[in-house]
Amino acid sequence: MSRRMYMYEPFHQMNVWLGGYRDYEYPDFSPSTVVELEEKMSNLSEDSSHGVPTSSNKYNQEVSKPTDKVQKRLAQNREAARKSRLRKKAYVQQLESSRLKLIQLEQELECARQRGSYVGVIDHLPFSGTVNSGITEFEIEYSHWVEEQNRQTCELKSVLHDNVNVSDVELQIFIDGAMKHYLELFRLKSTAAKADIFYLMSGMWRTSAEQFFLWIGGFRPSELLKVLVGQVEPLTDQQLLDVYNLTQSCQQAEDALSQGVDKLQQTVAEAIAASQLGEGSYAPQMTNAIEKLEALVHFLDQADHLRKETLQQMHRLLTTRQAARGLLALGEYFQRLRMLSSLWAVRPHDTA
Image (cartoon, rainbow, N blue to C red):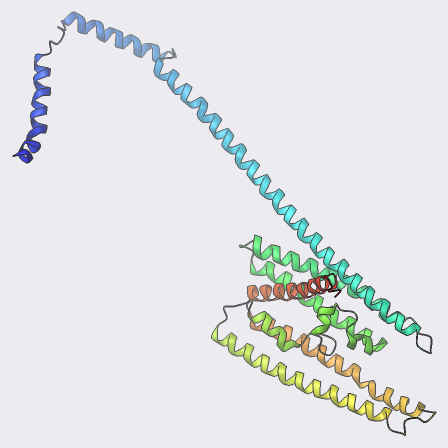
């Protein structure tokens, strides 16, 4: 019963409202009253047409004023936000550039420290050491090479991360510049090897962490491929197959060169110990050993040729964007090795 009452209650309420309206006495509108109302409405319309501001027009004007202020304030806020983003981007780039310069300075200090210890050893030898102008020139040029590589890496990182809409044509310009820069390094090393092959092979021109991974005066191509592949994924099935074949070829060539260097070491050792040790004169043995060591320059050139071919083959196998990410990864990998050297040099030592 209560539910039925609930259902009919709205209709009952409506009858109450209608009853109230039936009891209400409406005013008596005579014809003269209607005429007066029409004249007032006509006068109101004429006033509006002649530009006399009505309450409605005043309201619209009042509403439009704050709307204009809001739009102006929003435009100012957008412009301020844009300028703030630009300042933040410039500040981040400045910090990155300062960080790279710090790495470069630390590397130069490390190299200078190593050269100082090397010179100190020479000073205690029974013969006077001479400064090799070819090596001095190489050190200066290599220092500039590292600085340029840091700049290119920073620039490529900014392009890939901040400009997602960069075209392949623009990226190819950065790729060509980075590839040309690596070829320049191989040229510098080839010239310096003729001045002092032992200097190049020892890795004294590199930081301590880079020396730890040194292979015949540079990086090992197959190991570097592992670093690059992890940074350019996803790869297609054909790309994976091509990279696998390239890695196998690199490892075979590396093994052949390593065996050649080992054989050369054995040959030089045999040449030095060709006669009875303890005899006063050993000039013939030294002459023979020096002639054999000239082949060491050839091994360094072959190792650099393998490194160059590996970079070029990876460039051909990858798309433009993959190649750009690979070169960025390569640059940052060497930066991290240099940073590791700096951190290792200033690490706290256990005095116990």
